[in-house]
Amino acid sequence: MSRRTAVANWKMNVPGEGIDAFCDALSAIGQAPQIIIAPPFVYLHDLYRNGRKGGWTLAGQNCSDKASGALTGEVSAAMLRDCGATHVIVGHSERRALFGEDDSLIGRKLQAAVDAGMTPLLCIGEDEQTREKGETATLLRRQITTAFAALRAIPAMLVAYEPVWAVGTGRNASPEMVRDTHGEIRRVLSESAGGHLPILYGGSVTAENAAGLAAVPEVSGFLVGGASLESSKFLQICQALG
Ligand code: PGA
Image (cartoon, protein in one colour):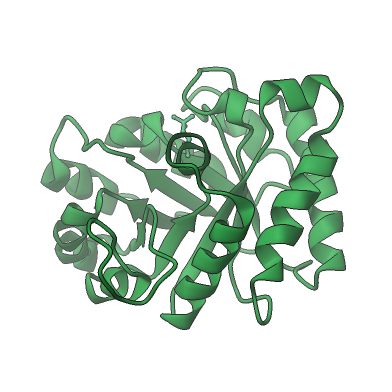
């Protein structure tokens, strides 16, 4: 299996222990998965400076679909790259639900990230009602194909399966559910020439459940929210991906 990936998505938070202490703890990790930290934009530079000793890479949590312009409050992918980020999260369920982002905007953001030389991380996932109606596979297919329709070619990128009902709720998907759903996603990606892309799981990953989820061969890594805000918990999750 190729090297797996652990992404720390801090959302609009910073670790209680402070960024420097978090970085010191993380840099002590030995053999590890690829670690990507996605802090609020304004802390990217702090993490970049610390990253020289730690060896992780950085991601933006979002980017504009435009390269520049009169767009107050927006940040372009090239600006994130200037701050030391190599990756950018696109289509997180909180962006979809709270900021009205739809699949075609998300597709344009993917292309903007690629145009700026960044590696996008596309988040997809179903809400609870969709799962109960048995329509998860259809929704995931639509999320992928609509976003990919905006791309000139499928780039090197990551996909994260994050069921909305599991994000920030303490209710993670079971390993069996993750195995089956990653299998569905893999089928759709293969049809769109993206069959080789890594698929991460996200949604209430913790130090306690990480080993069980990491045992699923279809899991290429984790996208971690709440549990990435404490270095000791995040380190245990990284070690589970080992
Ligand atoms: P969570 O968040 O780990 O707190 O559920 C995951 C995410 O939003 O990426």
